[in-house]
Amino acid sequence: MQEATFLILTALADGPQHGYGIITEVAQISVGRVKLRAGTLYTALDRLRSDGLVSVDGEEVVEGRLRRYYRLTPAGTKVLAAEAARLQANATAALTRLRPGLAGGMA
Amino acid sequence: MSDMTALERGYRRVLALYPRSFRADSEDEILAVLLATAEEGQTRVGLAEAWDLVRGAVRMRLWPAAPRPRAVRAAVKLMLAGAAAELAAVVTVAMTSGAVRAAVAARDPANVNAAMVHQVAILAAAPVAIGMWLWLAWANGRGEDWARMISAACFGLLTLSVLGSLSEHAGTYAPASTIAAGIVWAIGLASVVLIFTPAAGRYYRPRLARQ
View 1 (cartoon, each protein chain N blue to C red):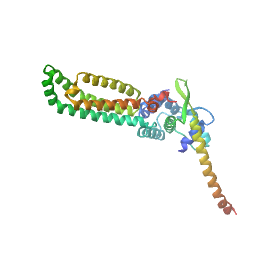
View 2: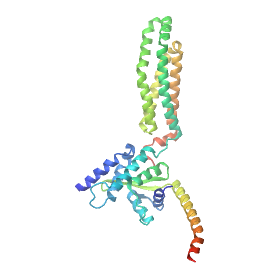
View 3: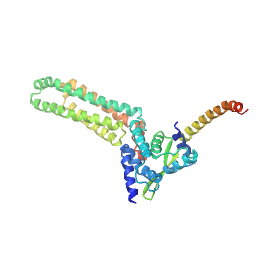
View 4: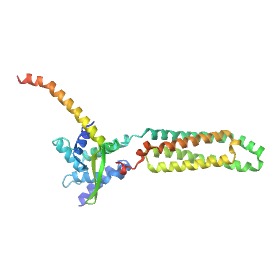
């Protein structure tokens, strides 16, 4: 899973968001490191919707413009949880292997 | 405000690169996000954001998000086969035309002209029929819902024309062309059944309603 996709799913994990909301959430989650652009966001959303991981939660018109809310589907929640667990396992393994080296370096 | 519309026009020009069905569904929404993320006083589309949009458009066109279900892929192949069978049928009709004429003349002299008119009609209609098969294969492959309806309607017409020619006892005169018509009809039946299966139905659902 690409990082942008992972972060989009994460942004939706605690509730529905609209497009702009996802961008600000992703910036927050990644501590400003990932600035999602509209093209990337909507290409990813298009794919996530057709894969059934994300669905449209509702629409409203704000200042004459369509604003659509997206939410995780149960399948999307499952996929995100599995990916998060995988990343966590990898990170844990990396940190475990680094620790002796770090300890040695510090000694 | 005039700055805003210039910027909006610029974004719309880039968004025009996206597939039409996607634009119908999401253009206004993306535009709102682009305008919301634009810098204060920005009047032109930035290079980085233009690149990001172009990349998205290329990706969407080359690798459409919705993979065609197996039923739709099979139906598209069948429709292409339908075009080929139609071509074969026309060739058969053209080649057996002399034999048909002789057979009709021998058994039913009064109807020779009618039979020949029928054959000419088949030959004249063939390019249209082949074109329809190809066009419907293309449109169904794209998941256009109207293509499904037109396919069903065409299959209805095809059935009527096959029944019509059977009732004229064309089979007695030209077994080969009846077999060819039967093959074309069977291909039509199979492809229409496939595109109306539930698995294919999800692919055809308009994007707006896709949940």
